[in-house]
Image (cartoon, rainbow, N blue to C red; front, side, top):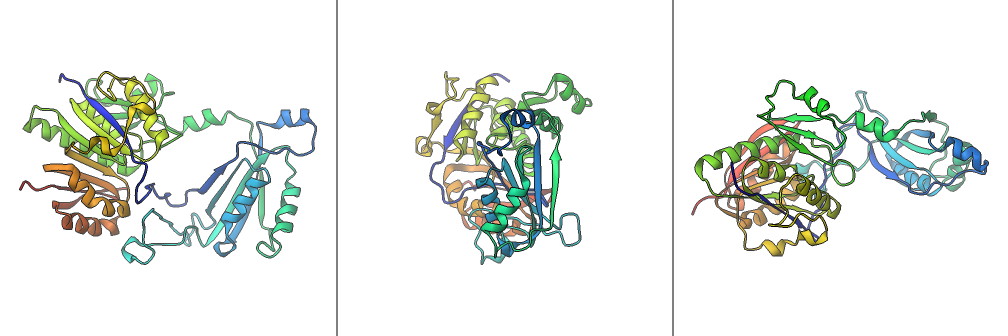
Length: 390
């Protein structure tokens, strides 16, 4: 396939909702990190010897009425490197899934609104090994004598001295999607890719390199995989119908993997719309490295390479993929309808099983046709449809 693909990065500064994936069952909620850490009165040499080692204290079984989020804030203020809230009942019959999404109406029962934390929480704080944990306990008790009257249920641990970056990277393996794409990270070697793609012909799959960490995830979420497989199938179908360049809209682009995949499959013009400037700049840099032009003749990765939605008002799209969440998707139904050509196809994910009918109804009312819950993976749905040809 010859031709040139163009990938536009569009920053949406003002939106009605701010989309993010809800935490998976039992995952940490409300992680915080401190750039500056206060050391105790121990000698400077002692601090240097232990600066790579951390000690953690976990306050266990705090009722949500005691506002564990406030305790996290206070622990950060007195020198914690990081804090986290987790479900105290994780792994038991009392384990409580908590899902949340921007734009959710607490009184709209179909979105199944719940409290933002679990009924019983564990609060974990990490401190430098030189910190006096006894002093931490005293400060919490003195500052909150009524809110946290009994903090006797706690666990102390020492985290080993290790290269945490390398340790975390070892847990991120390349991911094979739809037997055609291998999602990898910059530190992965060719041998790492071969371990997961051993049964694939090297001429039959594409490698997509992500920069996980600062602005988006790893690409392993079921919604990403659902949308990537859908984009692959749609591009194949479109190419059989037309030899022209396809205009694809990736609304809520996250890592940009969907837009980059479309550009690699065939010559396309792709607009990737997001609200996170860090994410967009990383994608622009990555597209330049992958030889996918951000703009015709421009391979820079800076703020000048980003567009505003108003810059693309005249453009209409043949394909739209939107991997966000149910509430934002419902809000965006008329917006997406206005951005598509007659006959354009639409694929959406970030939708839970009990939200599928609501999304189908909203998009049908907006004018879309053939709205269908097409597939489910990992408790997430893929919903598809098209804009009718008048």
